Image 1 (cartoon, rainbow, N blue to C red):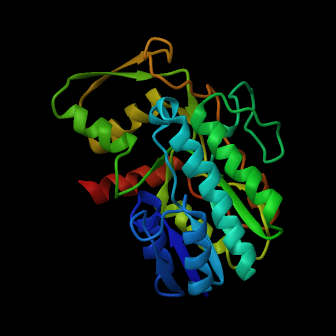
Image 2 (image 1 turned 90 degrees about the vertical axis):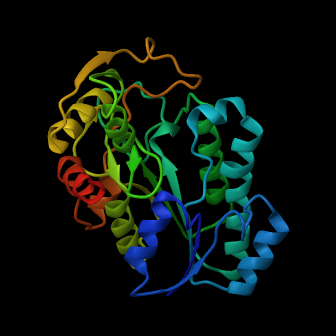
Length: 279
């Protein structure tokens, strides 16, 4: 297949390239070569490239930044996605869109399934939901992939931050009352690679298996990396940040399993591999 990837220089974009390059023809774009907020530019570029499928891994993902820059958040995560969907309709190709656990309000006592009521509590979550809505309005053939707590070899992320902090701190405070599933972008990329060959369109939750709090995750990272740091649990309220986060955003990968795909490995196995790679 000829696959156009937006945000190809991002954390997930790098892994998508590695996973897909040997099997498919890739058209790689970044914000410099394709500004997804430019409607006419997007349509012209995609009509000219005429891909078999578009994977949108471009997004404004700074959750706190979105809170102070809502116009930019909605422009990239909402209107930008709308432009891609319109361009895909023009060339009659499916769109794969990466969405987020933050479209849920976090008030749940069980993992969220794909058709649960949505209710984002942050500008980031609301802008990402707007992108989902545009896709469903415009296209019949799409894959909306909601994932969570991403980390990868390329780019800033929680495990990297923890290990950097540990170099100069013997004690680190980490939130314990937010629970989710850390997801390795390499595993997510493999999952997307399987999905695009299935033609099983729709909304998917796709994360590594298992769940934990940020505090538990930090402790496990240090255990695996054999780093001696005291992790002090604090509440999200104590660790004040501009944007509210869902307290419980574990995603059940129900549609993934029901369509016959094998669950992604445990987040504990994935982080072991990741730490070996970045040592």
